[in-house]
Length: 278
Length: 257
Image 1 (cartoon, rainbow over the protein chains, first blue to last red):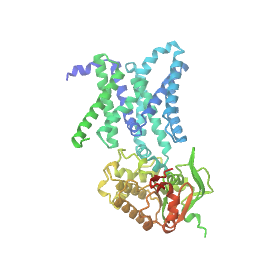
Image 2 (image 1 turned 60 degrees about the horizontal axis):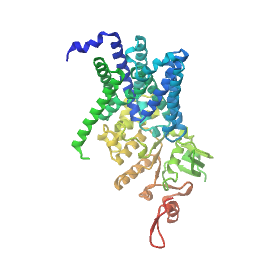
Image 3 (image 1 turned 60 degrees about the vertical axis):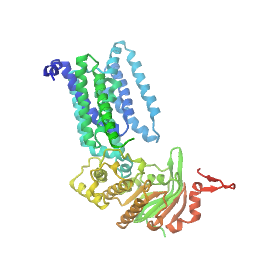
Image 4 (image 1 turned 30 degrees about the vertical axis):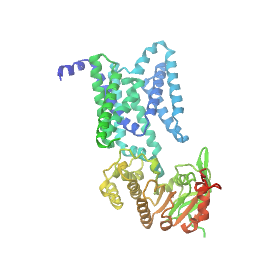
């Protein structure tokens, strides 16, 4: 491989910032995403991303920090989901879908009231990683560090609340607290990832590398590390490809992650076919 | 003679319980003295799981005159209780090893900031040895047989130092041999001073192992020793709808509700 070709994008400040920014969120999102995949919460992730969009719209209109308002909306959504699933014992796919698409639609309407913001719509939906600023990198890095620290600190408790919530709660363990913490961590990961790949694709950063890792190993810590690695590989490869071929960066990153998953799935299928015929 | 509350592992008086839309149990009263090996029997939908879940605070009771676990409120008493959910309520594909599952029994006691220490690993390993699972500590939980999975969860209850162990349908999916081995283990645990309450629709080995049987179908049909409860009259009343009946023309009819 030609080293000069590899280094070429890095002579541009915006590309360096893109590599750092996307790399950071991809690693963190994949790590948290491993729990999201294990608990089947992908749909919740989508809901959180869509309400975070409305949070950004509100932030723009009120002239306050869009990160703060997006985080507020995302956290309210995730904790609302915890309450919702506990109050009624049924799965609430329908209620959740109605609620989050409604809130999302409200965000678009709010944004459209001010023509100056409609230009932001595209970058919010599809990401604008090349426009990422140095101070935003600092913010992303701070939140990424916070997520990793919390994840490491409460790892055994999060596993306990995820694996056998009934048995744990029946023994007096604060399961709801850690289920809420998990969704709050997911909300933060989503909010810091929106600029990289946009509202529509952000769930892919959570889910796809983690699901790929789940095909490779059945050991949780290894799955988390591999998910982070796959996230990092996807984001770097995706950015290189988008640089040389002029493809949209966020979408290319997600596409690479999807191809990695497909490759892992194919290998796994071929292997298991070798074992048992079915 | 009225038994003192402190000597009871479970004390329920006139409990009504169930879900928002549907009351499952009405006016259930049951007292289980400490050190008892007790079974709850009855048809599916008869409220066995509801009773266990309400006792450990997973379900809020609708109303009751008394409800104590080990002489305390369910919220306090359950800290010295272990609940083993039905097999179908556990995610067996979860990437967790046998040893890690047992270690959770220690972590559960330590709460918010709990850390696992060397002695927790030692206790968990010796519990696995006790249940004959010594060589399997690094195996993913889902790779075990049904009987082995039950023993892992019992090992977890043991390291949790639970005085009361509640099992929801522990024999589901076990073959006859594994069922007998499980029954033997429950007897062992009872000898070690534990109180054990198992919900089961399986009537095998109840007579030889258990001290007390509660026949439950929405309400209490009978309670007493196996010999007192497992009579033809009570069994017919308890399971009547589930017995096939022969009609006048000789055809077999199933009376599933």
